[in-house]
Amino acid sequence: GISSRSNSLIGVVKARADRTEQYQDLLTMCRNAYCGARESLLRLTVRSHMDKLRERHGLVGMTRLASVFLIRLCTIETSLYLDFFGDRDKMEQRKKGRETSRGRDQDGKSDTEDEEDEGGKANATVAGKKTSAPPNASDQAVTLASQVMAEDNAEFQQLLASLCSALHRTVRRGLVSIHDLDTLCQVVSVLREERSLASTSPTTMAAAKAISAVIVDAQERLIFCANAALTKEVVRFKPTPIDLDYPNRLMPGYKKPEPPNANVKSEDGTPAENGAESSPVEEIEDDAVKAQLRVYESWFPPMRSVLRVLSKIFRVVEPRVFEDIALQSVSSCTRSLKDGSAYILNKSGVVHADLFLVKHLLILREQLSPFDIQLRSVERQLDFSEAGKAVSRFLANRNRRLFSMSTENALVTLLREGVSVHEESVDSKRDLDDALRSACNDFIEHMSVSLAGPLLNFVEQCKLASASSNASLKSQPFMTGVSVKAALSQTTDGLADKLGEVTTQMALYLENPATQSILLKPVVRKITRAVDDAGKFISDAVDGEHEWDEGVREQVLSMLTNIETTVKNRSSRQLKR
Image (cartoon, rainbow, N blue to C red; front, side, top):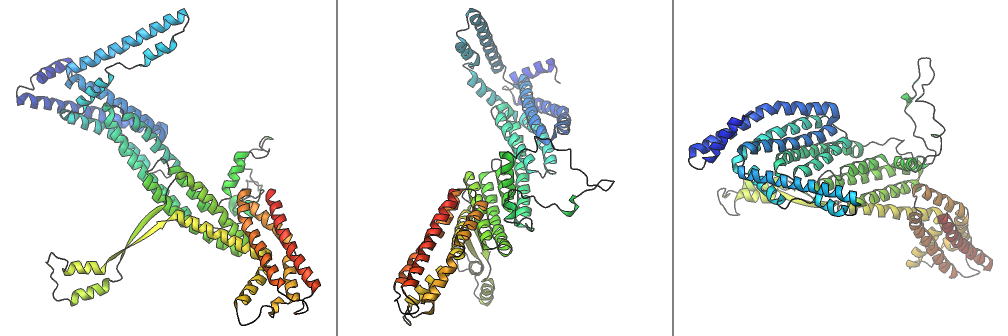
């Protein structure tokens, strides 16, 4: 280091620096020599210390400890630098301020001890004395900032920046090999906390800048890994029959089939045990956490991946970046859900396909609401469809005026006519709502047809015949007493059982009874409306014609009443359960 004799000589140079430029140049040389000596002395030591921290504590622990170390290093180096090159008068004022504050703390402690001996009735007042800052604390901070950030101290700021770059070097080398999103999120969170601490003092601004640079790199790595995970697990996801094994995946006792190589055998040929025998406590019913985990595992894998990734990166990346990632991932997830619904349609039927889509779209919209994002963007694309014609006109034009600065320039005309920009608004939240609305409408339509298909078909035929002026409704073959009675008989047979099966399936997919009610009420209203319309058409039939008589009419009206009563009562009873 620099001896006390050198320190006194530097003081002489500073005192004479205002007289001639030679002393100013000499003082600058002294600063450069000091900074160069400190950098050569500390650079390798700081880097070695960073490497040791990483080996002992891992990347996350090293990030926190190294940031604290750099903050302390900047504080000590600044104090040492100002002892040699700072303003003596201002340094004396700082020392006196510190001594004054220490004296007040000691007085506060003695007062506290005396008051405790007397009874301890004024602790709040003494605590206020101990925690109150000296009156000139803000002035000292401004003075220190002016000295550290002065133009003459640019070399020292470069020294601190060079020493703090060791953090960037060490962390960046570790970030390249990390693919785990949790680790990257922890690194960014730790760095943000340490940066907020480093930014509070002018002596540690170099550490704050170095930490900010590391945060940018960590966020870039996090965004890359998040996009890679979403591309692999959502965009390019290829579902297996196990992934789309609905409704079996929603059953309480469902266990995911293991791959063929999962059964490992020991050397004597007996199946190897996965672990020690479970204790009686472990065999007790699963608690709420395990039940929630089973619900989470029953979700479609792409949607599960989207929500998992978005929930991790929400607070550690910039809002615009997060919204762009969410927009792309939600669009891809919606397409994947529609493809999965098409597969389930062929495998398990239309009811399960509709309920699968409604369930997952509802969960996706509900889980995205806490993020409070718009999921909206404008995509711009260049259209070269007219480029060929524009080039032909350009070549055919003999008066091109290539060097003209007006709009008649042939090159400008070529670009204007040959290339166009198409803008398209992308709104993933609107698309998600539209997909959910369409899925709900499809479910209502399919359920209505499944429960009362012959009745709805009869009413539709009557409406078409009434709208047509070619033939009378009464003379239509489907309006005979026997035909109407057969259609209503088909609707009545097994209606209660069908309703019970539908509500059971809804309860399997949708846990909330309110959601089940919202979906089932339109089905009940549609069937009830069809019953009313059928009653109006049947009332126009004349007894004695087309196989109608009083007995047939009573049977038909009784069937209509039975259909309406069954639909209303069974649906309300199932929903109350």
